[in-house]
Length: 349
Image 1 (tube, rainbow, N blue to C red):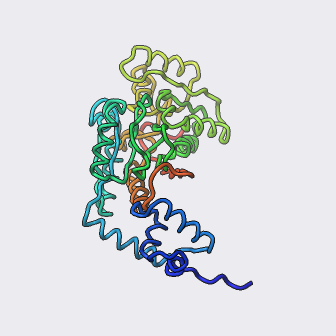
Image 2 (cartoon, rainbow, N blue to C red):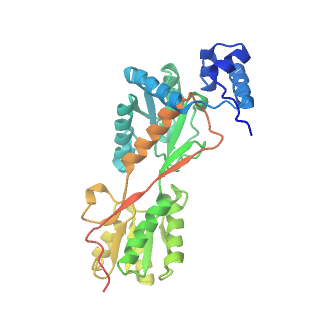
Image 3 (tube, one colour):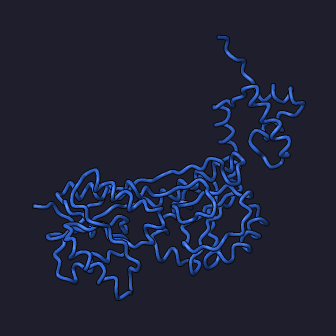
């Protein structure tokens, strides 16, 4: 079978009666070319079997990146908790933001946080600011679950969301691999001889990740075995009189020899306050271990800086292709964690 002749941008331009620069820009969805012309060029390119030269594409991307380094184009980073810095204080997501900033600086961009107001109530004003500044890239940080509808023209941005808490639109997404992460924790407890492994987390923490914590835990129970201890979903976590009672009732009923928790390690605190010897009687591991507790508590270290860094890679790639709006086929990129040993677990005798 005869090999199809290679179609170049020069060939497309001649057939369409357009300049090579216009054809190149149309193939990259450049906004300076009308939508009608972009569709016409792309349809003809598809009909003729045009494929870009990978080496030329890489070279041009490098040239464009060098140009961007001089401009320092802004990527917006959205948050919408109680105050401008509340989400950073309440969670370890400062490493996510720093990872995004470091990667952006390396690529010649600049990540700038934008607080959308409590539950996103100020998003319309922020949208006007971003439109005036011609910002083309956005990262949606972790959001409250009761977020108001955001007032953005999403066709103005190439957008990437972090985690699963934002669900008003489906964009490309970067998330920690919660399903694998809890299985990593379960596997390590199993390796140490634990056979009665329990899970005690808040309902909200599982809601925020589309119940991947629960899914990974129940899968581990089915695959590895052990006692079928029901997970404990807690409505409250801190500063609530019923939380400790609820946990201890569950603990005494099911007698786990290891507990998986999250957040501020309240199950560990409650066990110790009740006279439970950790890890001799019951082990404990955190499925989202605070880096400040490395060597103090066992658990999974999520790579939050990588989440931010990879999000910037996706946004800058989208900007270089002049892509924007809601993708037809959204992608999800998952970041795994590493197991960190700690004195709250030990091998069962």
